[in-house]
Length: 445
Image 1 (tube, rainbow, N blue to C red):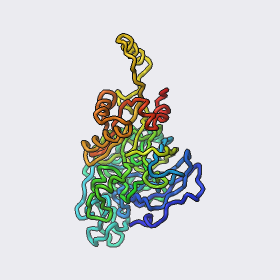
Image 2 (cartoon, rainbow, N blue to C red):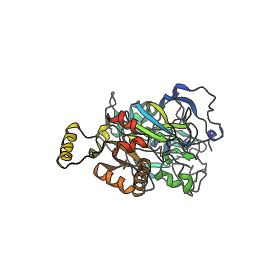
Image 3 (cartoon, rainbow, N blue to C red):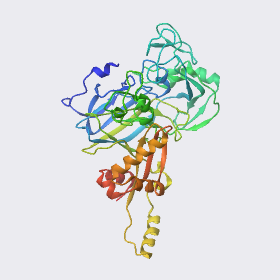
């Protein structure tokens, strides 16, 4: 168990600051009893360095959660039952290069869950300290006996180098990948306090000459859950692995409901968007990480291009606004076509229809995207529909209709994170306390 679990959270007697700078990270666990940084003032800013997400922590046995996220920040006066609106003001990629790909688990190198409990296959040490010797998929070795500790290997992987403006990238051949691997930490731009081994060390090169467009976002952004859990499992899909698991972080199905779905992998969680998250512990414990350079919906390879970066967030408390999970107000260009706000020209045509048929009721609406998660996409969709219905005082049947004719069900991560995105009546948004964000994002009213 990490030392975080034995440290008291930041107390309210500590003077809150307008700006809190974060450059330290967890050991892969989200712990409601752990130490928080800050506090930050309501309306203040969190400025953070973030580490690459999946692959580096996955090959670093001392990290217990599959990621290496920032230490959480206490938001002044945030209490369970409130929500926190997070304005994502800036996301900047600092890595020069990264590596990723589709993976396989290596039997004998983990206990039960390879993201959580790695094991040396020779001496049997759990979550051992490790060292890097050379490059390639056997480079990470047990510090005690020198045996490769490789809970994950690439089935098909690639190394990519980015241009100086971080707008595009190109996957490289074996010779270049190995050159980069020998200076992995430099090309990954790992933050000073990161303890992960860079995945660039593996030097994968199965995909050569592929051009990519960068579109950075945060795979992890949210509030601390009310139960200790590995960070990558703070969602209904990966979280389901914890139910009755055979390790110390096992949860019951009821305990898993205390998650906050901070591991979203939704590509619309990017600069300019607003994410509203539930508060389930005093101070909320806002954390972030797992920055991606880009990702197609579904993240169907299981992983994408994890990068180091810097992030600026602004936080505001919504008092007594209880939510079951995150709610996103995406940029207009990230909305499904049917969920985009109506143009003045479209509204003129609609008013003409109403006039011709003596219709007086024309809804005023704005986009909203409600997050759902579960062990599979069908369950995640049902969760998202129910959350949207409860949030906006509708029936599930009404949400189904609205998402069909004014929105879409979008896949964040396969197998089980989705967005229920649609145009919601302004009166329902106002009742839910969310209308100000719709006005801010979409110029409504």
